[in-house]
Length: 190
Image (cartoon, rainbow, N blue to C red; front, top):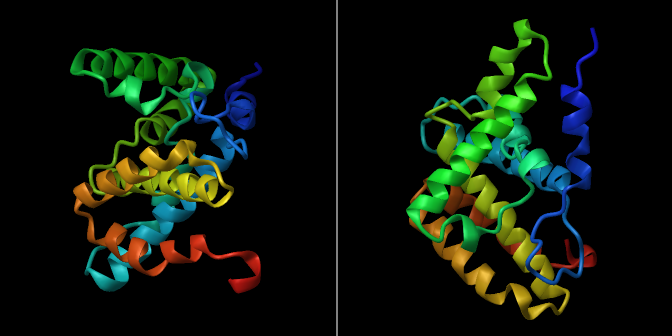
């Protein structure tokens, strides 16, 4: 029998993010997920080394890779729409769950549990890191667009910074203080 799960996951490269915004550089779901994985891994390492946590950085990276896989089916729902009110958020969560279930059904039955945990990000300890890594990735996109002269992302940048601070996650604060400033630099000054 043939299964299409990984062929579907491979299609993440065709899903564009930030559809409502004018972009100087397109960002695919694939590149975003890789960036979230790198940041989530870094946050877990920072937590372990500096805050006495016992995170699994490799698992954080893999959860970051799969965190938005449902968007292969749903597309990228713009934040202002998704969080407009509780009813829309609940409805969209049901759509995400359905999309994940459809993807899981494209795997052999004996593998589904392993991937269900990844698609649902069922890790109470790492889930906050994945969520804030996702926000940091969005902030980096805003910074890149601003640097390219695109003022379309100005409000999104301010709102995303505020959401990251409100998370009150020490690993994110450390990343923002120590690593985010370098995203303002050019290649020659890095």
